[in-house]
Image 1 (tube, rainbow, N blue to C red):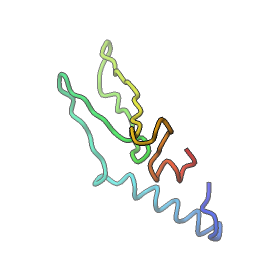
Image 2: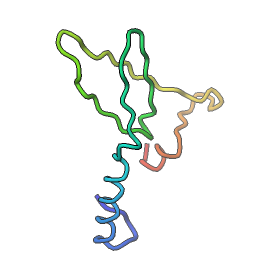
Image 3: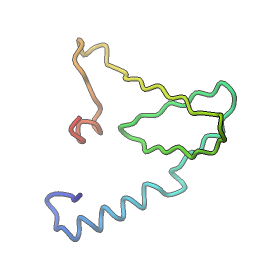
Length: 87
């Protein structure tokens, strides 16, 4: 992986810095689950990770949804982050 249009060494260093920056504690949210909780996030702009802080037989229940813009006339519209990622 690299950033185009800058020297490769500079690209590697910038990616390293950004990778460390985006996982700093100040940007993290840890949810403390309670009965009937619902958590939503935008996969295009969020990194998420299960902590597996539960014991069997408890399980995580996940449902994926996609929100479409009704004004798009049935065409798929995606945000700037998704467009930049080629989605």
